[in-house]
Amino acid sequence: MSLAATIMVGVVAFLHVYFLVLEMFLWTKPYGRRVFALSEERAKQTASLAANQGLYNGFLAAGLVWGIYLKSDAIQWFFLGCVMVAGIYGAMTVNRKILFVQAVPAAIAIVLLKIAAT
Image 1 (cartoon, rainbow, N blue to C red):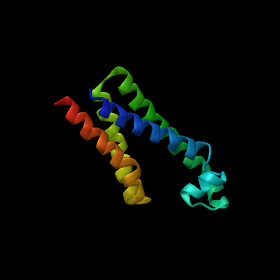
Image 2: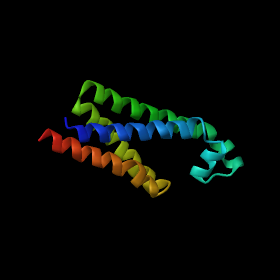
Image 3: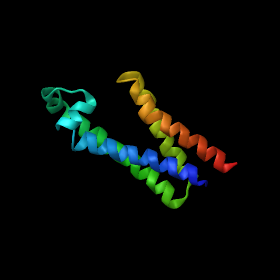
Image 4: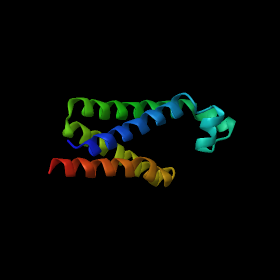
């Protein structure tokens, strides 16, 4: 596995830890509300939903770190694929920006893994 692929998978994992923190711990705080353009009232109403999303992002990060630790391309491919699907779905249903924040980094990591495998 190439160093570039490993670094990019690590970046995607780090992003998902960041999403976890935003959604589980900062959703109702000024920084979290600013990131997601939420009013205080809307943030409070949706906090449990956001925490659930954050938990899932944590699972994606854990899977990617697990794949890096085991040096398993198959595990990394699986979790990057999950990230891509989530990013595309989020871009289609919530905000197009999600495509660039979530799906594009995963796609870059997938390409780098493919190059490293050849």
